[in-house]
Amino acid sequence: MHPLRTYRIETERLVIRCYKLEDAPAFLESIATSKEHLLPYMAWAESQPTSLEERIDFLRIAIANYHLGKDAMMAIWDKTETIFIGSTGYHDRVKGNATEIGCWIDARQAGKGYATEAVAALTKVAFEIEGWDRVEIHHVPENEVSAKVPLKLGYTCEATLKLRLPMQGGPGDEMIWSIFRQEFEKLPIKKLPVKAFDAIGREISLGNHHWLTEKGKDNR
Image (tube, rainbow, N blue to C red; front, top):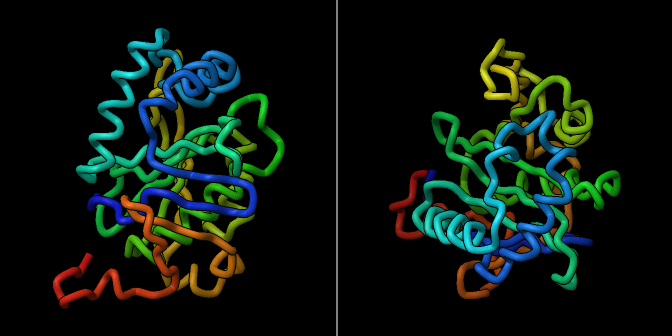
């Protein structure tokens, strides 16, 4: 995955941005509150840091990886940045000029459409700013709530792979959803009102691909 140009995304209700170390207390509290909610579908919740200092160290690595383009974890906040909603981001687990979007929502904020809003915004930014040709979403089939998000946004379920995801008690099946650039161009989410900003707070014009062709050097 290449280093992201986008560091902050604003939607109608959300601020989605690169983590900051000062997010650690809210992040830690959210994981603790939501752990039982997440564990049936996301085995990684079991091994999450349980102390504030461990969470700070965890975020140091996450932020460094974001800058280096190794992975891109992003915090989801409400528009005032006082209520932690969840976590999302672009992950470098798929091959080709593509990315995988992951997302989880604090158990107390579930059922409000935040996951759909966040994933829609990341999908738009993935194509219109970051220049990927394909975006994927992966989850276990048992997570029916997660399945509703890509379905609603126009993703296609390509396959269910057997015993591919690490889960409690052993590997679980993995549903893979995808959307390609040519499909995105025809979908309603292309018109989603979104603002995006770079690392120093400059607004990036969505739908303008000058980022991808500047000096003719960027062919990602």
